[in-house]
Length: 313
Length: 327
Image 1 (cartoon, chains in turn cyan, purple):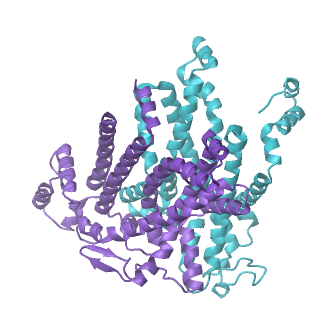
Image 2 (tube, rainbow over the protein chains, first blue to last red; image 1 turned 30 degrees about the horizontal axis):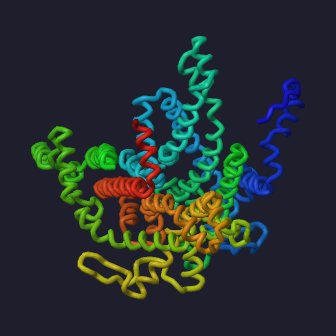
Image 3 (cartoon, each protein chain N blue to C red; image 1 turned 180 degrees about the vertical axis):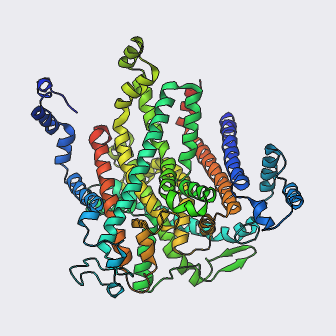
């Protein structure tokens, strides 16, 4: 963010702070990119629709009492109360998609958070410590990067599934999936943070902090950490899209979340069974929702990368 | 160069050992094969005899060595689910996966490289913009959804292509191939497109970026100034210099192709290794899972090694860099 000499005083008032934000490069780049505004709008609609599902969804797909088999497989636009049609149990597809998006977003966000915390910590330590610690940690990251994330997630899921007793599966499955996706996506963060830490470590402010006797951990997390978070934001955004796709893929393969809590991937898998009997909307609409959500996240991530790093364009 | 190869091989060994250790740990400590084999009533003497017979009372490193030794001889134990040797299960299913992966890669390269070249040279034209838009959507579309949508259009609505299986296969010794019959080829089309699309977008974007980079260099400007024909500049000067990173990425992406063949094989019920693995994960069939892990680990290490060697062999500049780093 750019700081003009004159704005330094104004920064301390609320109005001045808002003006500072409006003057910033990031806001300028955002307001002058139709693609960024468009994808932010679509993304926001998806996120609000998903998060607000219990309040704004037209029906409650989990309330068995309100379901009627007479309503099953309603064609889209057949009636106003079921704009996207219904599935085989008479559930409103729009409501099911909103609730499903909630699950997908929750898993995606939680696994990215896990990957960020793990990756940033490893990257900071590796970059600051150097030597054999660095070599071992980065070698581990390299090995994991050559292993595709989805395969890693499947293996973790399979092993945990074999260790945890069968009757406890449903209860722990959310955490298993978050762990499996998070553990397969941390190396990217670790490598980036390590690179920036190597640069920051040599700067004067770190030397100054060390000279006045600040502890190593405080230098790492209080001084260096805030300065290496920029790229983490970009990779985090792009990884959120990937994590949502990972979860959808796992759920589609039948090793994701239990069907009592259907995510978008589970909805697509369920709809897949009715592909040949002509009820295409049961598959296609959750698919469209998934693609819209991920596409807008990807576009926002691309824009953020270009805006934060003008050298790339 | 020889030192480098040696160094690289040395690095591969610990990786393989770790993969082997994980596979072995899964094989040995997850689940209890003794309890499963003894059934409900047994005497303590029978249990001890079985433990001894399976070698489970021996020290850890001896068991590990035994496991690796057996794996080197192609003995991965028996599948819990199918009660068949894992090695013969793999042998039956390997051809299906390899043929699918090969076709998908060929599809991605044959289409992706020309599309990338075109988008790099005429970057402002609307065709190039369309290519970029398609590639962006391709990145956001999960593999399984591509498969489902292709089935919906080409199998359900149009009825042109089959939606599952390999069609008629011909046996050539132990290798079963779908390339020789019309129904086998028809069955291959949709899965190959599904699997190859992600790789295609990746190759296209990479070739485009590399072309943009190369077309900016002085020797291209000089070639233009000499009055060479555009065709000759684009293909024999520019494209040739983009190929080193492209080859690397194609090589490294083989790993991704293996991983996503799991998904594609599930969507199309393709009887390959990936489908076998997914079915094994669902019922925690540990011997199959650990053998698959071991095999995939070896394949990945070999691919990485070959790509690294190719890279250093093709581009002399990297060898100099390497020396400077080490010295």
